[in-house]
Length: 356
Image (cartoon, rainbow, N blue to C red; front, side, top):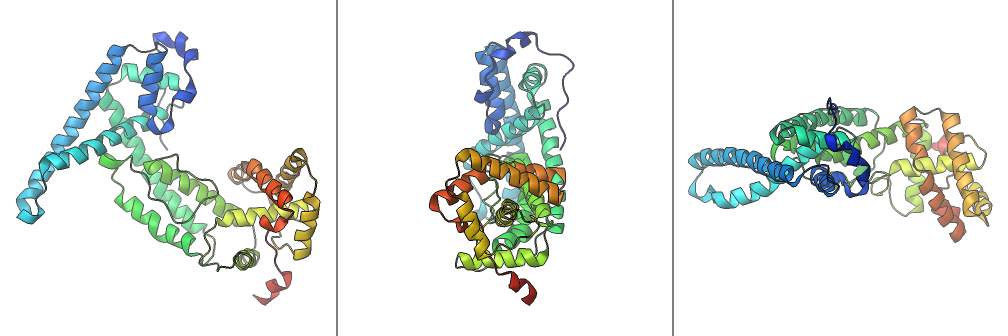
């Protein structure tokens, strides 16, 4: 992804920057919340805010004029039954275009990775210039998303799971093919059927799909550390445990795999072995009994360290696994309180490996 370059100089009011409350700057409406916060602490004058608003209106009007011309050309070739009222088109387009303009501005200003430099850009650049720069960055993210989609398909988990395959083979392609970044770049990616281990609903437009694909590729690469036969048996056992089929189950496959790998590590086994027997699950249940939260935190951290040390995943995959430590502790607590480790780990019959 392309990033915005830092300006040569900082604003004169940079001494007021420590007053900025970063919690008031929201990623989903970055430009507007950044302007409000900079105005609040006195880094920018109200006159600049008014000027930015006027420039945004100018960009919007340019896009609406172009849309009217396109609509007029379409009217000439359409039958009476196909003619749409121009004012209604303008109203709908204006709302979408305004959101899309701010989406492009957000993309550009967030590229600085520092509100101080983003505020400096607001002071020294025209809105149209920032808008066009943001559009270029969005186009770059589209290209990167296409490449990530290719990687996701190359690293895919071999499974008959419908949610996983439909999302990978149909839904992502459909979204990329229909994404209109010029006028609707802000539109949220429709809910994809296959769930990730981590939700990405906070992001919008191509940012959301880009993040989804990045995480999916990481999850696929983690799954590639294990033997296909063990993964197939584990997923079949999970489906049986939950009274469904591998095709119909709606679950993140990475979650199922990583939990059993960590369960093996807790038992002192090689974490590359995903098969846990009923007896081992019972042993895990007993091992969780009366463990304090602090002890479970240490247990989770040790298991993750062991998994990374033994399986040697690439750094991005190792960081992804490590990032789930807190959630794994929460899951261990739930299993401990229910006195049932099968809520977290999946039992399998190792003899089934020789019958596949």
